[in-house]
Length: 123
View 1 (cartoon, rainbow, N blue to C red):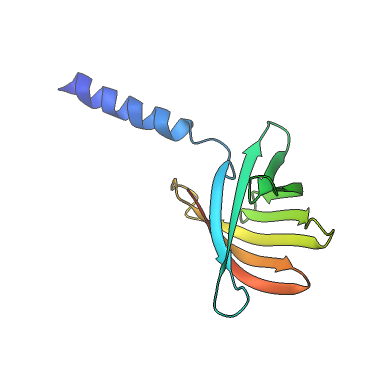
View 2 (cartoon, helix red, strand yellow; view 1 turned 30 degrees about the horizontal axis):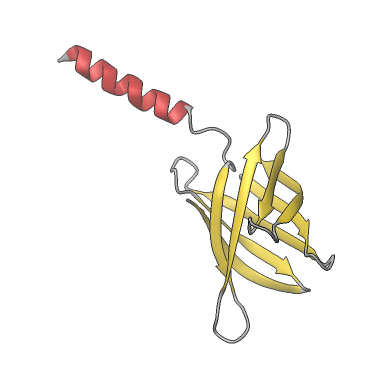
């Protein structure tokens, strides 16, 4: 019985240890769009050991992220990119539910000179 309990604790510890960098993964959210149709935003972020890299809306028209920062003080996130036409995109927020797999980033998405409240959830 003790051995089984020890194995369960070890498995749980390994699972948490493999969680990795807080921004790693695929994040999905929505911003307001034309009319009442929301615009889905998907970000794929990866920590390479030195910096955060990734894309917005992966696929043939993916937008490369030009800068991404994570400040551990308050778990503040800042992501920058440019639309295909060169207009700046910026997302600033803070990570919530840091200990959970499906954590979220609540913040402000700025695109085309407009600001939108956005909540991104890691999938």
